Length: 333
Image (cartoon, rainbow, N blue to C red):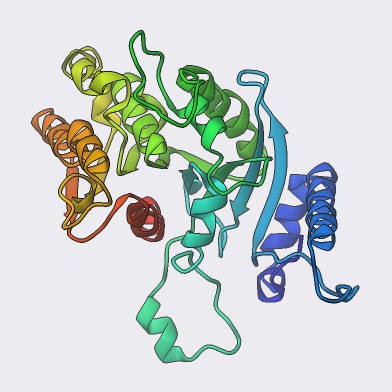
């Protein structure tokens, strides 16, 4: 991987790279070669110049990891902090659909002081808090791996899933174990992370996983951002189970200090629609109503919950909306 020069001058990246270990860096190199080989195979008008390299993000690392719990191979992207850890360790943003969400976070990710920036610019952006982004994608390289995420992010259901694209579901428990028992200890062995400052971000099925984790096992994360959660899954199963889950986990929920649930108005109330069939599906899934009712149930529990319904936004709009804003949400004191 390529590293940002100004960050290396801070002395932090050298320490991080050493602690991440040679094996991780070798994996990054293999990933680059795979990307380059794939690009060469594409139809091109002329041979590609030998000095053209795969695009990389500054102050970032990446590696592949196969889970013993899910059997899936994940591609992990790390957005490195821009300065040393605060007392207690770095807050961590755990981002699902990482190959899609991580690039969108680049515009919001804090940057170290640059030799070329003006004092006015630094005053404008302020003394941004440091944090670590851990984006979890899939080794397929697909930004949205439809089948892999359908398996990982959904709960077991006895009835119809309502999913017209994927046939395998119900792996959320194993995926949560991967996140908390495999990936988190690995990251904690290389970075000083704050165990009380973990944020989970998910979109669509990832938003469903985020809210199910909040209700079922709230102790693993302290902040939650669910963009367009697919609460229709399994005949609105999550909504039906919510009251009992909140009651059973009332004590653990006191450790949750911030929740954001967002949805686009066009996900249920579009100004126009492509077909009557599409409109019927939107009405059956009730994305807006479900998200608002879920937020209200959490608020009734005494949690600090924000709900936003964005006009003229459809489903994919909400991924872009959330990924850019969740960085500040996760790293703010």
